[in-house]
Length: 156
Image (tube, rainbow, N blue to C red):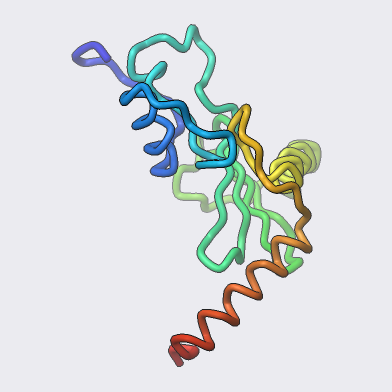
């Protein structure tokens, strides 16, 4: 990046894996780092106006929420069955105004994109995740939590 330049690329710590592999000249296996994107093109000014990642998919610890970020939009999808929340981060970086009810089409489109990534098991192009569903994701979470509780207790 040139001195004094600003990069508006959306990135995550998970991207360090793919970026480090690219720096080292090592191919990232298709079944590894399923949501990690190589950010070198962005750092080197080689994105040609396109973002490195179209969306960012995240889950909170324990998978209480799944989150999808696309440009200025952020969808928070509670796995508890509560209604999703939608924020426009350019105008509301503190996420104080939920826009889901006022933007049902955008909420539905982002939810559909999120479900696509959940079902495919990966958000990185070329990654070969384990296809699944929300139910399978929750079953895996519950199994992992039971194993952790059996080993370490509930912490309460």
